[in-house]
Image 1 (tube, rainbow, N blue to C red):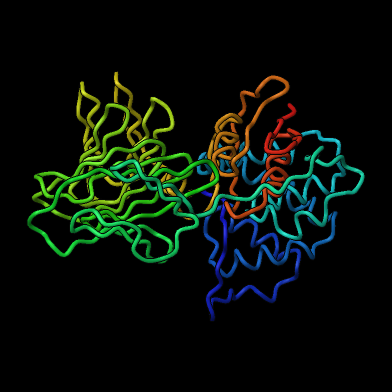
Image 2: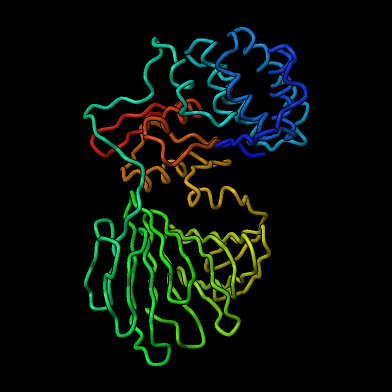
Length: 397
């Protein structure tokens, strides 16, 4: 059961129980959310209703539903239970009202909303201090294109239109993404280009065969200007999502850290920031080859591989592609992994004071959120405090 992000309401999707007393209605909505039976309209109603509830009523209901979660433990995932344990039951130096309000806000995925921040008691020490105020922005579209001759083009500032010509191949920027096209399909000289995203940037491109690639921050993709051999081969560093154009005669191969992922036409995500590669198959079929063995994946599976082994496990599909959909989705992540993601996305350096906790945390928030909003949520989840100076973030544990 995942924490919902944005909730959309559909016209005419009204519950027959909408006229029951507010307390009963809130209990019904919260219970429906916990057991996974909520409609989109009910999720929206629950999000809207929470800010209107009296403190003691909210406290009582969250207490009640905490017990329900324990009773439904066999059905609920462990992370969701842990989230309630860490927030609702943790002894923090804040008012009980804020404790329950924060719990409800994070559970409903509305951390970062006006409600979430407006209710924090003024007497509580701010979770973020800035000794030198600095504007830290979320990642935006941008990358550097390195042509085969070494010329570099900053795509952030390049206008839409033709960027370069390589034989009969035209390299263009169209609606903010890179596109390759050619009028001559017979004689074309093959040269290699590289698109690189630094920290604080992400980018989308379309390869010569029509394959679309989304690059996460701190990533790069090397590829030819044309696929005219018996295969389509590219090299990835970092993280990318591939929507591969189907061509049974030319398998598509992604080379990463000495390993090869082979497909014919499919959608999959590859994360390779370290020597461990995580390949998540969304649709179609892929095989992962680490040089010692080859393993085929089915949709919904994930391969965790290095040069020694390949392990296959069920995939959290939504988490795997959350970055592509503009969301942070933490699911049983440790503090170090969470802060690595923030470092890449917000272009900040991270250091720690104190011992890193062994606990793991779950939650979600938009990648378009300000860094202050994300750190507020992490403060509620983990109890950590933060200090931001220039582009360096200190995590105080």
